[in-house]
Image 1 (tube, rainbow, N blue to C red):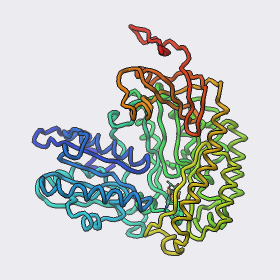
Image 2: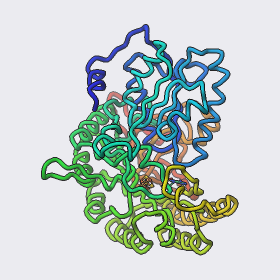
Image 3: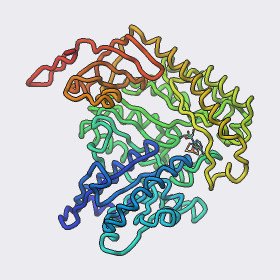
Image 4: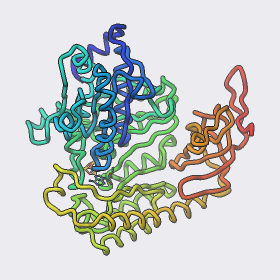
Length: 493
Ligand code: 5AD
Ligand code: SF4
């Protein structure tokens, strides 16, 4: 934590002369969702209020992603849409934060000259100060971290700061679910991936900070915590002789009153060890959901990706998971059309999906990322139509498996943490308390039922009577919640 940030915590400023309206748009992974929550919390302390549209705001921030080119192009397209507004209202401040800001740096100003602020993910704590400078007329501001070869290990590490002291429940998708960062950065250097460059070296946060934050989240009414890290199960923190691993953190946070569920994403296959799996099995609050990307089912491709394991290693890990936690739900990521991927390589990926029976898979077409080893070493030689076909084929195989496995839930009763109205309910514009509700099981399966908005935040038993590949459909069983002075019967439909 920087000295500047400490002082901001001690002396929050709420000067009405600096009151501004903030709009923030977030794309990308859970890390970005969490970063946006932190930035909003810090700016609220400076007297900012949050608004729903760029038109109503005087400060507009884009939190960006660099994992695929498509995500970046969308941000540049959205920035271009702001040009007219900025010409009419030059006093509005436009900022770009996150991975694309770190990767493109000054290029952002060149491609979008009306941008005032560029801030990488390791420098987010500086946003209040940089906005202040812009408002004072000091011109465009940029704060980015050092590149992976631009200093000593220590200097590089220090230039990527974890930014986690402030939480803002109103910024979370639901107030009773929160992400908690336990690790920043990544040192795996998979050849296709830009993340080690944009988010810097892997660094575990001190366990005492993580525990304090878990207590703070519980105090705010949070029931479910999801630990975040690029390779979350590789987490280690050394203090003298003592080393803390993810299993230790789960044990520590398991003791926090009010917390009912613990999850962690994203796991790295090589570090899915017995002790961690046994901890997940033995701690009742631990979700039996594991996200462990395989990326490919071909040894040749995995080698070019520099993933650090073979298909046989991955199968061994799956056997270990099934052996220790038989009902675990495992999900995966895949990249199709990676450099040199043949039809046979792809078929091996299909075999892997069939054998592992993932709960679901996120499938991506390979996108060259300048600055990565793959961009330097291998031609992007799989045509886009072949990538698209493989993507569709793999998704169809996965969806059939998801549907088959979801059908096994018919007639079963599951415990669901209710998140809120379902997407369908929101799309239909349903209003009033009676609407289709959505929640998740302990193994992260999505469940919907005709319910009541008051159910949000409760854990309820739901009887499943239908299933699709993505969703279980059910009915809430009778349950009485006694929350003095009234008793709410939740199956009122
Ligand atoms: N192209 C396509 N997909 C990628 N991913 C990471 N880098 C790339 C890339 N260059 C995918 C991986 C990772 C997920 C978050 O994004 O599957 O697990
Ligand atoms: Fe990227 Fe590989 Fe690190 Fe995941 S483990 S963030 S894919 S480099």
